[in-house]
Structures are given as structure tokens and as C-alpha cells.
Length: 262
Image 1 (cartoon, rainbow, N blue to C red):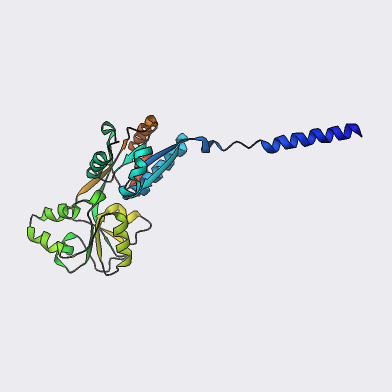
Image 2: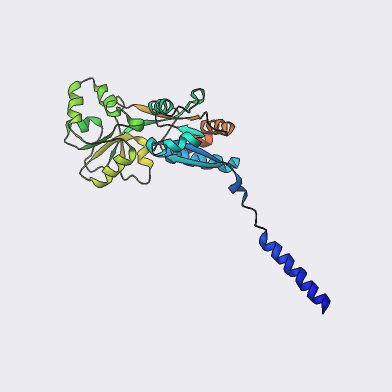
């Protein structure tokens, strides 16, 4: 009986100690997060690329793609990499944030100006000239990667009267993609949105893409740069190299981006 009591006590002690030992957290929970901040236009493409890179290199990647005023405070504390939706927006980030390593800025992909029209293109819009000479309501975006874009496009006609006429058809000027998208969803009377070709590839944007006439088309790029505050600089440079490669090119191409138009 004494032997039985001692055995039970010993077993209870083992179970008690086992209950106190916490299982180790999965390896992923111990890894530092690589933080990427940027704008809305390239978000879905760079998110897919970051997921692929992270899986291949055992790195936790987090991408924040919203207007800068929503992430600026956080980025100044922990940004490892910044991506842009145009050379202009990268310059703005560089000047405003003050944490970008300018020597690391790399231009990566291009996209072309385009017109988003309602599904099926019921108004049979064929190009920018239709938005000047026909009575259509238009959304433009004067912010992020589309600063002054409509002027750059229409200005190629070299006729100030065309600029004046186009302006009469602007129903709404957005400052962010989110603003433009919300207006597009809520105002079905608006028939066109001057934007980029990649917006026709986004699942949450309903519409068809009409290409801007070849002689009026403009292009804007997206790029990336590591920050001066990161403690994961090598990972950042490695990710930029990944974005230069064929796997990332395939991801971006599926979203409407390209390196060199054929």
C-alpha cells in the first residue's frame, strides 16, 4: 500500500509539472515582421509578391497600402520598406517622411493610363476624345500616382480648348483611390473614370477598361526603397532584387503592370 501511495504522488507531481510547462509558440511567432508601407494602386500586386517572397525565405511580411496620412506615424517608427505608385509619389514620400534611403530607390514596373467605364461599356466610349467631345461625366484623381494625370493626357492634344472642354465634364475630383472608388460605386450616372489599366484587374472595382489613344497615353511607374531606420536592411534589398526577377514580374503582369511594353 505504501508503495502504491508513493507511486501516485510521484505521478501527480509529473502531471503537475507538465501542466506548468507551456508549449513553445510556433516558429513564425518568434520571427520579426518585415513592414512595408505604400499607396493603394500597386497594393494587391506587391502584397502577392511579398507573400511569395516571405514563403520562400521564411520571412513574415506585412504590407500596408493606404493613403499616407493613415500610416505615416507608424511608418516613422517601424517601416522597413516603402513602395510608391509613381516617381512623383516616391519623391513625396522621400521629402515628407525623411526615412528613405535615396540610394536604394528602384523603379520596378510601369502601367499605362486608361479609362474605366461601366461594365459592358454601354456608352461605347472609345477614348479620351469621347470624353471631350461627348457629354459624359468623368471622375479624375489628383493624388497618389495620378497627380495632374488628366492634364498630361489631354495636353498632348496641344489645344487649350480641349483642356477647357474636358474640365467641364469632371463630376468629381478624388484625392485617393478609395475616394474615387467610393464615388464610382455610389454614382452610377458617372460614366468614366480616368485612371490606369491595372484597375481593370482589381476584384473590388466593377467596370471595363478602355485604353487611352496611343498618341495620348502616358505611363507611371511603381518603385521601392529601404528605409534608414530598418534593422532588416539585407532583407529589404533582397526583396527589391526579388521584385526585379521573373517570379515577381509574372505576379505584376497578371495585375496589369509591365517592365517594357512590346
